[in-house]
Length: 260
Length: 337
Ligand SMILES: Nc1ncnc2c1ncn2[C@@H]1O[C@H](COP(=O)(O)OP(=O)(O)OP(=O)(O)O)[C@@H](O)[C@H]1O
Ligand SMILES: [Mg+2]
Image (cartoon, rainbow over the protein chains, first blue to last red):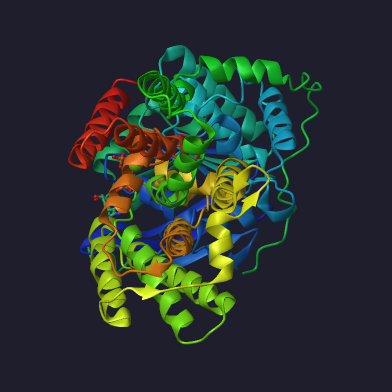
């Protein structure tokens, strides 16, 4: 899988984020390698969504460094992340319900002709091709409005949207949270396929069963700090649960965390 | 930023060639879509109204009367399109009537000051754009509720109209404006043709451009839009500017029709613009709507008033009829989902 000698595609070094008095993230380090699926787990409010949104440029980190292909970058706007090839599938704000599948997949980067007139035909064709390439077969027309799709179909669209661009890092925030067994399995397979295609994948999940099914590595957040970073084949659900609930925190003031 | 630039076009998937884009299939899907019928409710209602009035009055469907309905509706059509742009982003522009008034008064003032009609019209348009842009800036950047901002602008713009005109109407006698109301382009009067042109442009922009998609995304799913990199604030500023522009065009049309610029509150026009939008099936929560709907709504309201007048129903009943039609149609809209 990951070749140790390569620099990680995305590396976070000592990143922090506050919301007023709330320390949502404190000096977190995280590496994402090509072809690797990393699961990010932690209790409610541990800071998982915050980390993702900061990487995506929705609200930048307050301090710390983000490196892409080994080089420091500043991501202060969703467009910065997109330009780097970082795509995010959000827990709560993935798709625009009132738009159709094609409009959603191209939102913000529509193909257009002169005067901003949309190139509908070509967008529709590529959207369909992407769905086929990812073996998303359950979706009917790509011209249906997203509001009418099932949870699994919505997630498939959101994931397809993320990989349709030449993305290198795909981040998914609880993609299976609202899904039944069969649809969960479908989406997880899709996630695994992304890793196998050489993308770096970060998967946020509460479901350890899911995590062990697809992840190569598991990073644990607790109260905004990373308390464990484990290889999936060298750990157990029990060890991960312990880290989530009682993982050792650095001094609460966050002063003595060494970037290891 | 040290980002390696990369081709951001989608990967070419080696997928099977797509089936022919059968427009018949698309048409069939459209007809089955309930939202499509919600958009058409107003058209059906308009047809019913026409049939009823035509059976009650011999005059209603004569060419002359149809033309006068179209002419009378042209201002409302333009305003309704501006209002639609704002409402589709889940906002509302309560200052639209006042913007029309102040733009019109600026036109009259410039004309009376001896500037040419071209300059006067440009100043009129600039006034509308400015007022609308201020609305948009305060709503989007100041993050203040659209309702409050445009209520404030309603008062400011009306006040400005009073100050500029000193509270008195200004006569505007001009050949260009006269032609605009009385001249014809083929069978269409110029003012009707102008309203139709605005409607067609509005439709194309809303449904066939990036801006239109971003507008609908901003209204229906602002968070998703922002996450996709859509500049939601800029879209909002743009729709209020568009609304202001429509107010100014309405101002030119009204000045031309009346032959004067009057510092009135234009509340009826404002209320009817909102009514036309609601009638036209545009969701007040944003993200869903059309141009055809509000245009039909504006025609419906104008035809209603025209028909009642032909039937010699007292003018005092007209606002009641308009209000009832709006409330009933809003109630019907509630059941469409
Ligand atoms: N926009 C915000 N403003 C203020 N506080 C916030 C904001 N977003 C997150 N927080 C706070 O930051 C902390 C981390 O929240 P976050 O949403 O990242 O947790 P999470 O790990 O994603 O939790 P969950 O599993 O419930 O999704 C919480 O205390 C939360 O209340
Ligand atoms: Mg979360």
